[in-house]
Image 1 (cartoon, rainbow, N blue to C red):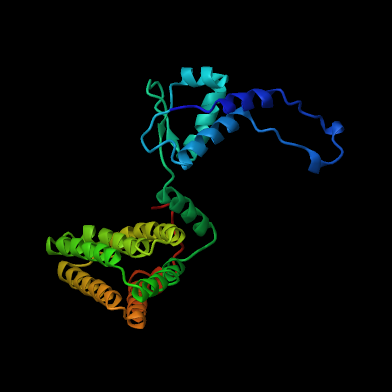
Image 2: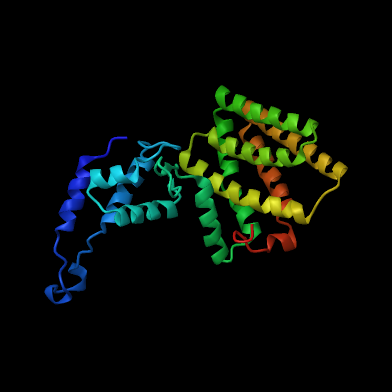
Length: 279
């Protein structure tokens, strides 16, 4: 991994910037906060990770090499590492000679924090599921308005995987794969922002569904019947999209999601507050 020489130069220049006393400033609005050296170093590596210059699983150089290259002390470097660890962008094994391991940003991490925010706002389970109705029916409209062979194939592959799991009576794996089907539905639209927002919702809903199943177990026959009905509904959706039946596809999927919401977020269950701390 090549380190940018300007990082060393920037650190050295900022270390020489004089810090003005309060009496030397005419207004609080004119005060300039000089970033700490550790923040500069953390920002440098954060940028490389986000831009993809450092990949998942890469290792940063050993501490000694970084200290020499950047011209910083060990405490400063470790403080920078603590910043990046707190953001889950690296993991450091103390005493390891391989250096810090790089991790790409993930929607799982964001959804966990988003769950904390939603919980602090008093957001209900019903609200969480209702938000999905604002995304997927619109995506279905786009897909049906201009059916693409690539998208249809991807979705039918997901359906086939669901069928195999259901025939094997792997009900928990089937429900997990249903979440992936919902993700694929938005993914094939090619809209990155909606993909991110949808995956965030799916991660939160998956955690709720795992907790719900634990509290409300179904017997074998009841669960199998419900999952078979779901599979038929997914197949019908893809048929409608492939046929270019825009209104029919949107109507069908909106009804499917509404029925699913009533199952997962019925009455008292829907009134529960999103609980990210207890999951």
